[in-house]
Length: 189
Image (tube, rainbow, N blue to C red; front, top):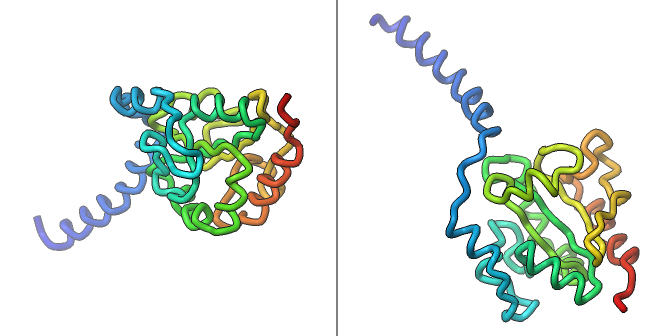
Protein backbone atom coordinates (compact mmCIF):
# COMPACT_ATOMS: atom_id res chain seq x y z
CA UNK A 1 0.00 0.00 0.00
CA UNK A 2 1.46 3.39 -0.96
CA UNK A 3 1.62 6.36 1.44
CA UNK A 4 -1.35 8.15 -0.18
CA UNK A 5 -3.55 5.07 0.29
CA UNK A 6 -2.33 4.67 3.88
CA UNK A 7 -3.09 8.31 4.64
CA UNK A 8 -6.58 7.99 3.12
CA UNK A 9 -7.27 4.84 5.15
CA UNK A 10 -6.07 6.54 8.36
CA UNK A 11 -8.41 9.52 7.73
CA UNK A 12 -11.36 7.20 7.10
CA UNK A 13 -10.72 5.26 10.30
CA UNK A 14 -10.29 8.46 12.31
CA UNK A 15 -13.59 9.79 10.96
CA UNK A 16 -15.48 6.57 11.74
CA UNK A 17 -14.37 6.17 15.37
CA UNK A 18 -16.70 8.92 16.71
CA UNK A 19 -19.60 7.37 14.80
CA UNK A 20 -18.89 3.98 16.32
CA UNK A 21 -18.70 5.51 19.79
CA UNK A 22 -22.04 7.29 19.37
CA UNK A 23 -23.66 4.14 18.00
CA UNK A 24 -22.44 2.25 21.07
CA UNK A 25 -23.97 4.80 23.45
CA UNK A 26 -27.46 3.41 22.94
CA UNK A 27 -26.45 -0.11 23.94
CA UNK A 28 -27.17 -1.18 27.48
CA UNK A 29 -24.58 -3.48 29.06
CA UNK A 30 -25.83 -6.47 31.02
CA UNK A 31 -26.51 -5.68 34.67
CA UNK A 32 -23.79 -6.44 37.18
CA UNK A 33 -25.34 -8.73 39.79
CA UNK A 34 -22.92 -7.69 42.53
CA UNK A 35 -23.57 -3.99 41.99
CA UNK A 36 -27.33 -4.51 41.90
CA UNK A 37 -27.27 -6.59 45.08
CA UNK A 38 -25.23 -3.96 46.92
CA UNK A 39 -27.46 -1.12 45.75
CA UNK A 40 -30.63 -2.91 46.75
CA UNK A 41 -29.46 -4.09 50.16
CA UNK A 42 -31.26 -1.22 51.91
CA UNK A 43 -28.71 -0.86 54.72
CA UNK A 44 -29.54 2.43 56.44
CA UNK A 45 -27.28 2.12 59.46
CA UNK A 46 -24.87 4.88 58.39
CA UNK A 47 -25.45 8.47 59.42
CA UNK A 48 -27.24 10.68 56.90
CA UNK A 49 -24.30 13.10 56.79
CA UNK A 50 -21.93 10.51 55.35
CA UNK A 51 -22.16 8.92 51.89
CA UNK A 52 -22.95 5.22 52.22
CA UNK A 53 -20.53 2.68 50.83
CA UNK A 54 -23.19 1.13 48.58
CA UNK A 55 -24.53 4.50 47.40
CA UNK A 56 -21.47 5.79 45.56
CA UNK A 57 -21.14 9.32 44.25
CA UNK A 58 -19.97 8.00 40.88
CA UNK A 59 -17.73 11.05 40.70
CA UNK A 60 -20.55 13.50 41.44
CA UNK A 61 -20.28 15.35 44.74
CA UNK A 62 -18.43 13.13 47.19
CA UNK A 63 -19.66 15.39 50.04
CA UNK A 64 -23.32 14.78 49.15
CA UNK A 65 -25.18 12.09 51.12
CA UNK A 66 -26.21 9.99 48.11
CA UNK A 67 -28.71 7.20 48.80
CA UNK A 68 -29.71 4.11 46.91
CA UNK A 69 -33.17 4.34 45.42
CA UNK A 70 -34.71 2.09 48.08
CA UNK A 71 -33.01 3.98 50.91
CA UNK A 72 -34.14 7.27 49.40
CA UNK A 73 -37.78 6.22 49.17
CA UNK A 74 -37.76 5.11 52.81
CA UNK A 75 -35.87 8.17 54.05
CA UNK A 76 -38.00 10.62 52.06
CA UNK A 77 -41.22 9.15 53.39
CA UNK A 78 -39.95 9.07 57.00
CA UNK A 79 -38.37 12.55 56.98
CA UNK A 80 -40.82 14.38 54.74
CA UNK A 81 -37.91 15.60 52.63
CA UNK A 82 -38.36 15.63 48.87
CA UNK A 83 -36.17 13.41 46.73
CA UNK A 84 -33.89 14.60 43.91
CA UNK A 85 -32.98 11.97 41.32
CA UNK A 86 -29.99 12.59 39.05
CA UNK A 87 -29.69 10.25 36.05
CA UNK A 88 -26.31 10.16 34.30
CA UNK A 89 -24.16 7.88 32.16
CA UNK A 90 -20.44 7.21 32.34
CA UNK A 91 -20.02 7.83 28.59
CA UNK A 92 -21.94 11.13 28.61
CA UNK A 93 -19.76 14.21 28.13
CA UNK A 94 -22.51 16.59 29.30
CA UNK A 95 -22.90 14.55 32.50
CA UNK A 96 -19.17 14.84 33.17
CA UNK A 97 -19.42 18.62 32.71
CA UNK A 98 -21.87 18.65 35.67
CA UNK A 99 -19.34 17.21 38.13
CA UNK A 100 -18.08 20.61 39.38
CA UNK A 101 -21.65 21.72 40.14
CA UNK A 102 -22.10 18.84 42.59
CA UNK A 103 -18.93 19.91 44.42
CA UNK A 104 -20.12 23.52 44.74
CA UNK A 105 -20.61 24.51 48.42
CA UNK A 106 -24.04 26.06 47.72
CA UNK A 107 -25.31 22.90 46.08
CA UNK A 108 -23.84 20.69 48.81
CA UNK A 109 -25.65 22.80 51.41
CA UNK A 110 -28.93 22.72 49.45
CA UNK A 111 -28.63 18.92 49.11
CA UNK A 112 -29.04 18.60 52.88
CA UNK A 113 -32.71 19.56 52.51
CA UNK A 114 -33.33 16.77 50.02
CA UNK A 115 -32.85 13.03 49.80
CA UNK A 116 -30.30 12.66 46.99
CA UNK A 117 -30.14 9.77 44.50
CA UNK A 118 -27.83 9.33 41.53
CA UNK A 119 -28.66 6.62 39.05
CA UNK A 120 -26.37 5.29 36.35
CA UNK A 121 -28.41 5.14 33.15
CA UNK A 122 -26.60 2.00 31.98
CA UNK A 123 -26.47 0.05 35.24
CA UNK A 124 -29.89 0.70 36.76
CA UNK A 125 -33.00 -0.21 34.82
CA UNK A 126 -35.13 2.33 36.71
CA UNK A 127 -33.02 5.10 35.17
CA UNK A 128 -34.23 4.03 31.71
CA UNK A 129 -37.83 3.28 32.67
CA UNK A 130 -39.34 4.84 35.79
CA UNK A 131 -37.08 7.90 35.68
CA UNK A 132 -37.43 8.64 31.97
CA UNK A 133 -40.83 10.38 31.79
CA UNK A 134 -39.97 12.38 28.67
CA UNK A 135 -37.17 10.33 27.12
CA UNK A 136 -33.85 8.71 27.87
CA UNK A 137 -31.61 11.72 27.38
CA UNK A 138 -28.90 12.33 29.98
CA UNK A 139 -28.29 14.08 32.23
CA UNK A 140 -31.78 14.30 33.74
CA UNK A 141 -32.73 15.68 37.13
CA UNK A 142 -36.19 15.34 38.61
CA UNK A 143 -37.87 15.86 41.96
CA UNK A 144 -40.35 13.79 43.97
CA UNK A 145 -42.34 14.68 47.05
CA UNK A 146 -42.12 12.54 50.17
CA UNK A 147 -45.06 10.40 49.04
CA UNK A 148 -43.08 9.44 45.93
CA UNK A 149 -45.08 11.53 43.46
CA UNK A 150 -43.05 13.32 40.81
CA UNK A 151 -43.17 17.11 41.08
CA UNK A 152 -43.72 17.55 37.35
CA UNK A 153 -43.77 21.34 37.27
CA UNK A 154 -40.17 21.68 38.47
CA UNK A 155 -38.26 21.87 35.21
CA UNK A 156 -35.29 23.74 33.79
CA UNK A 157 -36.66 26.92 32.16
CA UNK A 158 -33.51 27.15 30.01
CA UNK A 159 -34.26 23.82 28.34
CA UNK A 160 -37.86 23.71 27.02
CA UNK A 161 -37.22 20.82 24.61
CA UNK A 162 -35.65 18.65 27.35
CA UNK A 163 -37.14 20.06 30.57
CA UNK A 164 -35.27 17.73 32.95
CA UNK A 165 -31.87 18.49 31.39
CA UNK A 166 -29.48 20.61 33.43
CA UNK A 167 -26.10 21.54 31.97
CA UNK A 168 -22.90 22.83 33.54
CA UNK A 169 -24.27 26.34 32.95
CA UNK A 170 -27.50 25.62 34.85
CA UNK A 171 -26.25 25.92 38.43
CA UNK A 172 -28.65 28.77 39.34
CA UNK A 173 -31.60 26.94 37.79
CA UNK A 174 -30.71 23.73 39.61
CA UNK A 175 -30.36 25.52 42.95
CA UNK A 176 -33.71 27.24 42.36
CA UNK A 177 -35.32 23.87 41.55
CA UNK A 178 -33.87 22.32 44.70
CA UNK A 179 -35.17 25.23 46.79
CA UNK A 180 -38.60 25.03 45.20
CA UNK A 181 -38.84 21.28 45.80
CA UNK A 182 -38.04 21.90 49.46
CA UNK A 183 -40.59 24.71 49.79
CA UNK A 184 -43.34 22.79 47.96
CA UNK A 185 -42.83 19.62 49.97
CA UNK A 186 -45.67 18.78 52.35
CA UNK A 187 -44.88 18.53 56.04
CA UNK A 188 -44.78 14.91 57.25
CA UNK A 189 -47.56 13.75 59.61
